[in-house]
Image 1 (cartoon, each protein chain N blue to C red):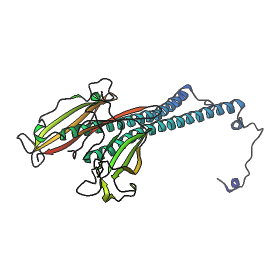
Image 2 (cartoon, each protein chain N blue to C red; image 1 turned 45 degrees about the vertical axis):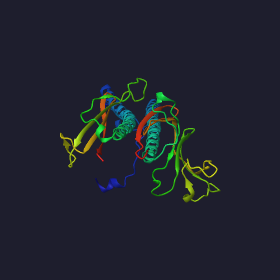
Image 3 (tube, each protein chain N blue to C red; image 1 turned 30 degrees about the horizontal axis):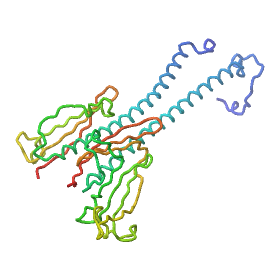
Length: 214
Length: 135
């Protein structure tokens, strides 16, 4: 390329008969066609985005139901495995009576009487929330602030032959979206639960051996 | 250059085909995603069922745990049960001090629980095991 051409101003050869410059602009048809194609592609891409967002939401909701069930089963079986006494009356199997939807038992992790305190765990449903309530029994007044050394077994009776009052120590939601919960069995406790949202319901079941139950 | 002012029908068809393959490829991501979520849920169900059956065996006193290969049976024979599609098998063997299977009676029993189920035409299984010792 010669140096001359470097400084040559670009020129539109408007109106010349050069064959290369026959189409200087797009025709209306070309613009419309291009726009239509462009819009179609944008719509298609949006649809792909929309579908992926919907499927993400659906998968997330589904996984959430599984997670809640998994956590609920794991928490409950971990506590039940260690317990020394179950207070709730459980039928041997669902045919032998209506299984309760809550369970109360002694906390076996603070294994009494070796160490720790006498505390009770209750798993119950409030709406679709699974609660884990810790409570204790004591004759000391006020019950709420009584030191753990004064806590007694639920079946302990005082001089006038009455049972100790019960107070809640904590009450925490452990899992959500639990639509049904059932317990049954003797020593080997079956936990049956279902999780659901607006569109789906999933069922889960496990069994736990209460190895410290006498 | 003059002869190629427009796309030929072949070019258009090839372009549409490529676009189609791309779109279908992306669509398969979603079905795969749903399948994975479903498989994960079924594995959670199966592992909980297996853990339950294992605890049921562990609850039995050492001498009463039946030794031998198990048979595959339905977890629930009730067709309306949500676990009707799950099958269970419990294999129990004696094991020696090196934890390897032993034909002769020993002081330890290995309990292997397997849960089978059908996931989109294929059989899946989940296995868990525990050891029970005489004490």
